[in-house]
Image (cartoon, rainbow, N blue to C red; front, side):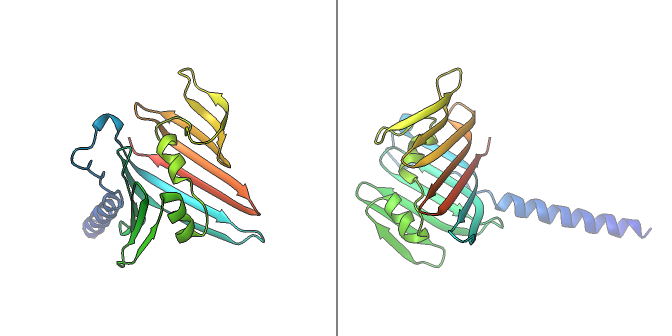
Length: 195
C-alpha cells in the first residue's frame, strides 16, 4: 500500500512540472488594430544566446519569445525558462523601447541600437524581420551560399552575420541560427519556432 502515496506524489510532481512548462511558453502577441494581416508575422518559440568574449569569458541566456511584426511596428516578449517575463521590446518608426520586468525603460532610435545599448552586443533585430520570413533583408548586400528547392535561403551571410535557416513552414524557417565573430567576440543566437 505504500506505493500508492509514491504514485500520488509522482503524479503531483509531474503535474507541477507540466504546469511550469506550460507557463514558460509566451502567448502570441495579438496584432494591433488596423494592422494589415498579410504583412503581419507572429512567431512563438525558444531562444538561446551565447556570447564569448576575447579571453574565453562566456555569457549565455535562454528562454522563450513571442514576436509580432506588422511591417511598421514590432513587439518582442522575452520570457525566462520558468515563465517570468524578462522584457518587452516595442519598436516603430524612429523609436524602440525596452521595458524590463522591474519597470525600467531604455529607449533608442531603432531596435538594433536598443539591443546594442542593453546587451553591449549587436543582435540583428532589423535583419530578423526578414530572416524570420525566410528571405534576406533588402537593406544590405547578402551572399546566399545555399537555397532549398523552392528558392528559399538556407545558408547566407548578411550584415556581418552567418545565418542558417532550416525546416521551413508556411511562414518561414522554424530553425534559425545566427553567428558572428567580430573584434574577438563570438555571438551565437539560435531560435526554434513552435509548431
